[in-house]
Length: 490
Image 1 (cartoon, one colour):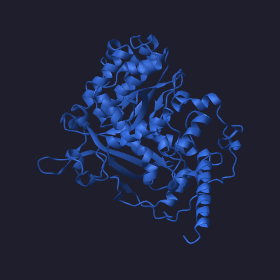
Image 2: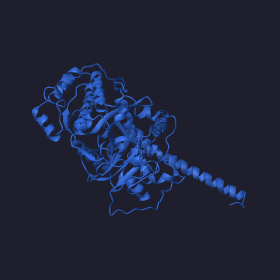
Image 3: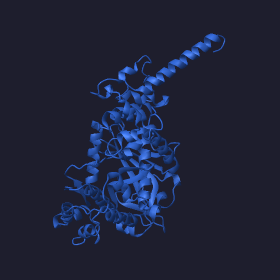
Image 4: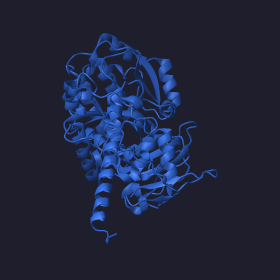
């Protein structure tokens, strides 16, 4: 287990997390009542999924779409107080002329997150109202329960130590240090969680956290669609890492991840954990944001492994000095972690330790002395990526996995696996960024997804619904007039 640093005092920049429940409980309930899950099957989009059966699970396959708001509803209803989500006040005239990117994610506010890019896949209009009301997604009770599940999983891999920062550069340095420790935990223990990543989308800096990276191949082999280790059978129910022997095709258990890593033939797999209030997998529509989230993580990791992200992109965005030395207080706190009690505690939680991982007298003192500013520490982090992915991006599997757990008990409900699709991701990001940059208006749900509106906090004020209702009314009138002019036609 690695030791990660945790901020113990407030600083100016915002941090964000991409974990929690993917949808609210109401949204999950509506979707699952409308679209029945299929156990142990695959869909037309190449997504494979498995699900644990619940004998008490009742499926409702009778859709009951929620009607659009009456067309007579006045737009004046938008101009109210903002005491609750359903009474969102109208933005001022200046806000109406600014793009969402400029209004909500420009300096000095935080930059874009992975959540910002994938949440609109559910409904852009809803996310617009959320940003207008709160500036970001507020955690519901279900999301808070999901956060606790994630924290418990993270505690199985990392031990957190509170650190106080003195200057802005310390905070980013803390994040980079945690990435370094996370990569080393992956190499030494076979798994790491909550790994911070950054990337560039349409010229904008985007940050996020990957729930899990591991050497554990998902159990579904995609019917031979992948090659190499991704086509190997995995012994079901085992906590160890397995692969097929190239000689006799028998399953080999690898209790020591270092043995597997030293072979230089390993693959690293990305997994995202989502929590749910219902004991079934999401529909393909509900899975869409998670799918793009995993693909974004894959692209960001690939670019970091290839060394395509420069530290100056981050320091320019956050207005930091990449050459400024970290504060003495920050260096002293991190170096003080090299204590026998903490070292012993770490070794007890991760038995696969090595001479170059947090060993007394070598870690972390020499690293921070030799790399005591953002520029130098970033370059050291990139070298750790190269060690962790020795064959470059070929070491990163294209097989992506989403794991769904109960938000109350944390038990696994099921999984969905699919292959990375760069074309699909690029098309989605291009479309999404058109809205963020103000090049088009936000789009609401199409007619076949109008059931989403039933659980939306903004259903009573949604201009998209009012507009669609008016369009329906106009079309009805035109059709009726056409029938009156041609009474003989149906």
